Length: 98
Image (cartoon, rainbow, N blue to C red; front, side, top):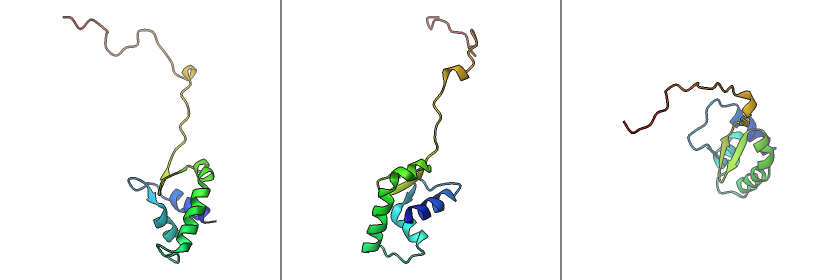
């Protein structure tokens, strides 16, 4: 449940902070501050988020230590999708000995 709230919160932002979001800050944000820092409740919620890391990654969120980062799926380059024209260099290749 907490992981869904964290995912909705992060994915609703167009940009992310440099280095991503701190998990504890996100937990405080989505619980409207009802979970106090240093409490057993925040440790339990943090464990839940870390346990759900594989599912969050499928949603585009990477858990990196104590931070959450938005990641984009990168499609592998397929050679047949790139047009190769013989002699299409923007500069001519020649010996450097001039």
